[in-house]
Image (cartoon, rainbow over all chains, first blue to last red):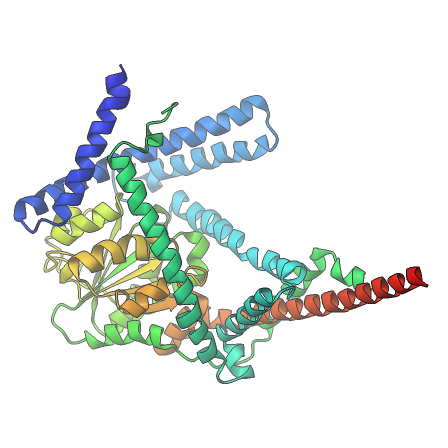
Length: 217
Length: 286
């Protein structure tokens, strides 16, 4: 049993990891074809992950409903939304689930008038919280905080037309802040992130990092 | 009084934002919109391919409804610019929830510009895989997308039959809300298949893209609602992004005023506290 639960996944991860890295650097048609084939396999596996995601979401919310956990009413909406959208998608304005999504049906209406509107509104209310947080917490307590504050004000003004109206060079100053100090910091962060990603990938390929196996690995 | 102002109920701040944004929407002031060089680069690249036989642009819709107000106007403007210049447009989505948004953008502009599905434009829909989908497209476009969203064969449609692989597109523009620009398109499509890539992203993500702009891996960037408004200015259309500049300017201005008032109160309070502690110390000594 341990062979299937631990040894085989480790062997698959090692072999596929080494093969995927190697073919990236081999300029031969066979390597290109193999890469194409592996990519297709990956996409098929990724499609099945959607089912896993749906199962996981519904299972989680079923547990909340059973236990009448705080906020269980939201779980009712998860089920309601899932069932309504799925039914509308399968019905597909009378055309059935085997053809491309038809326009003008219930799914189309729900997508435009509920999903898009609700999702966009959720992001829009951020503006209120940002203003409140800025008033309460954005203080020039130290030199570093003052520099950050001044830079934030310049970027906020430079990014909107009113900035140019107040001072003609505001957009250019904003652009310089983004192109020079921002980019220098971003480069450093990105180098660190990607070196970390390479290290983690190697740890997975060589079986040092095994948390993806689940359980007590 | 100062302490009271420092601890003001946040609902008052919400109210100021609401009133400011509503006033800007109801009584709009004409504001100057100056396209930045990053936005012009995307626009000029599309302009440079007009007149070329079978000139085709690939638009990847990699965002969800949450980013619709920022990215949809750019999508509409780019499609409009392509159609006006008789450039073919192929749409695809790396995000499943972008499908409806992409269709809405194509439908509205194609109707307005009188363009025909399958001949002037097509939409391929969403496919899983992200990185691996790009790799498949890089080798064999018709293999990766053998049919479009409506079930038509891509090898037979006039808009896609000349596209052999990703490199066959004259320009690729990704409209992305997450990490698909740098995590997928730059890393796998630009570096491996040497395509010319432009991007459009949300304002919050755009600072992450600047290293790729400077390295040339990204040849232009339309960032946020402001970028979308700049693009609308370039295509000479007043859309939702241009109209959104007044409320956004008002919101930014209110946030800045909030910061200034908050800091003024903070420093006044701090000075008072210091004075009180000094006079308290002197009282203790005497």
